[in-house]
Amino acid sequence: VIFISRIQGAPGDGAKSLAAAMTTELAGDGLIMTSDRKRADFELSATVTLADNHDGSETISITWHLADPKQGANAASLSDISQSNLIARGVLNRSWGDTAYDVAAAAAEGLMVAITRISAASAAPGPSKQ
View 1 (spheres, rainbow, N blue to C red):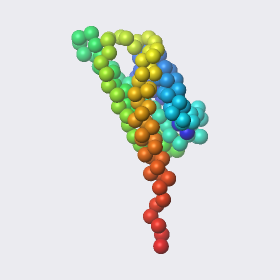
View 2 (view 1 turned 90 degrees about the horizontal axis):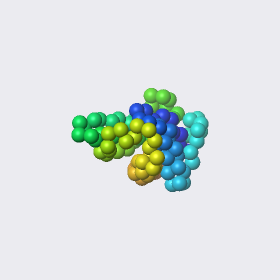
View 3 (view 1 turned 180 degrees about the vertical axis):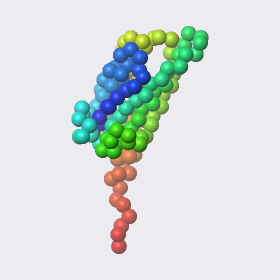
View 4 (view 1 turned 30 degrees about the vertical axis):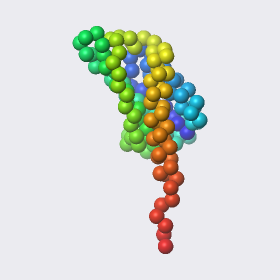
């Protein structure tokens, strides 16, 4: 069960569009999404940064952070998925449109691998006590 908490630094409608696109993508991969942090097994957040390249383009970097919501607001990340790409300056200052879905689709594969790995590790039996 996944809770998407916050997407920081995204220009335009990026925070809303990325959250909606990631919800659609992960739900399509069979995960249960929740709007209640207390019900979640994983909390997903993202940090978006833009760097001006002084040639009419920007570098956009997005880092998705997967954490345990039961550890509180300052929980250490269990896994980070990073993306980076060149875009035309200002292209995302308004509506992200299909770009949000492209970003979510690209990140979801890595997130699914991380969630599967973390879930398997936490389900594995500990050392036997004899």
